[in-house]
Length: 217
Image (cartoon, rainbow, N blue to C red; front, side, top):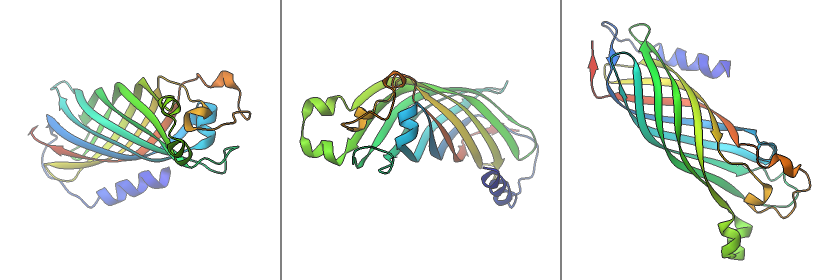
C-alpha cells in the first residue's frame, strides 16, 4: 500500500501548475480500483476482486461541500482453490449512487476529497455450470438488489488547470449478505449459515482522473 501511494506522488510530482489556490466547480470523475473482499466470511474466502469502476459528475459549493451523481461497476471472480465444489465464474455488481462530501485545495496543486457514496446495487453471479443447466428458477436466485454505502477518500494532485489525478480508497458496504449458493455451490458445509446474512464488505484501492469544467481562482 505504501509503495502505491509513494509511486503516485512521484509520478505526479513531474507536473507543475502555477497560480493561486483554486476552487473546483463542475467536475467529471473516473475512478479505477482493485476491490479486496473483507466480509462476510464466505464472500471473503472465495471471491477475488478484479476491478472496480466509478464514473460520476460532481458539483462543489464555495464552502467546500460537494454533491455528485454517478454509476459504478465491480467484478469479482471465484477462487477455484477455495471452494469445496468446482465452480468457474464471477460475480458482478452494477448500480448508481449519490455522493456527498468535502473537498479543498490545501496548496496550489494538492487537494483532498472525502465523502460518502450512497446508492442502489444489483448483484448477480454468472457461472459456467449454472448457465449450462438453463434452470430459470435457479438463475433467479443468483441475483439480488441492495442499498450500498461507501465512505471514500481521495488525495489529489493537479496536472494542469483542467485535469488532476488522485489516489483513492473506499470501503463499500452492501446491504445484503452472501451465501455460497449465490454462486451455484452445491455444498456449503465449510461455513456457518448464521454468517450468510452479515453485510458483504470490501475495500477499493485505486486511482482516479478528474476533468474541471470550471474553476474559480
